[in-house]
Image (cartoon, rainbow, N blue to C red):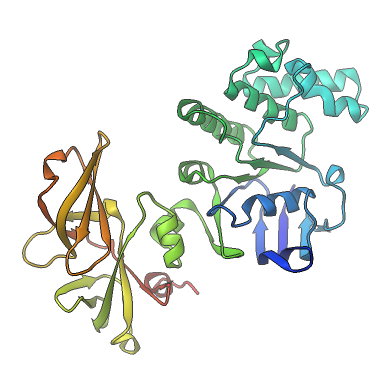
Length: 368
C-alpha cells in the first residue's frame, strides 16, 4: 500500500522566493498520477519534494499516514527514474540494476531473483550482459526503470523520462510504461511530463499546475470535457481551445450570447437570471468546429494557412470584426480552403462559457 497525502504544501527558496503554494492532493495506491503544466510551474520541484531531494518548506507530506517531511530520501520507499537515465557506463545492464541491492546488503539469490523479475517485465533478458553504450535510448530508459523496479518501492517517480527520446522511441517507450503499469497494478506512480499525449494516455488522473498551485485535478477526459477554468481549457488539448468574447442576453437551460454586437450563439450551458448581461468568453475546441448551416455562425474569416496532417487539416484564419485568431481542425484534407472564406459553428453540446476565467459549465455540473 502506498497512499500519498500533501496538505498545504509550500516551497520557498532563500526564505522569500515562493514557487509552490497551498498544494493539497491525495494519491491512492495503484494510481498513475501525471503532473503537467507550463515550464517553470513547479512540477519537477513538487516531484523532488516527494522524493526528498527538495525540502518541504511548509505543510505536510505523508506516505501511508507517516509524516515524511524530514525523512531522508533513502528511507521513504521511493524510487526515481530521471530524464538522463543516470546509468553507470562501465557496468553491464545486470550490474546497473543490481547495484542498489548490493549496497543494501541483499543476498546474491535475492539480487538475481529481483533482476530476473525486472528484466522479464521490461523484456531486457537479452541485454543483461551489455554495457549501456551498446543500447538504444529506449533500452537505456528501460534499464533505468528496471533499476527502480528491483528495489520494490512503495512509489515510483518519473521525471520526464521520455524527453530525450526521438518521436518513434517515445511512442514505443510510452506504450511500454503503460504495459508496465498494467503488470504492476498495485504500484503507485507519479509522472512528470510536458507532453500532453503522455499525460492523456498514461494517467489515472492529471494534476495541472499553474501560478504556483493546482489549477485542476481530474481524469484526462474530465479535464478535456469539463475544464474548470480558461487556463485548463486552453492548456489541455492541441491546438488550444478558441475563445471569443461575448455577453449573455438570454438565460435558462440554453443560453444566448451576443458576439461583438452581431452574431448570436446559443449554448447548451445553463445559466441563471443573475447571469444576464454577464461578460463571458465562448470557448470551442478546434475539433468541435463544423461548417455553418445557415446565417448563424460563431466564426468567420479568410483562411491564411492550412496544415494537412493526413487524417485532419488545421485551418488558421484571422476572424473578422476584431476577433482573436481562430484554429479549426477538420477531418480529411482541405488544402483547397486556403485563401477562401470560412464560416463555422460549434458542434451541438460543445460550447464552453467562461466568466472571470471560471467555467459556467463546470459550475452547472456541480463544480466549485
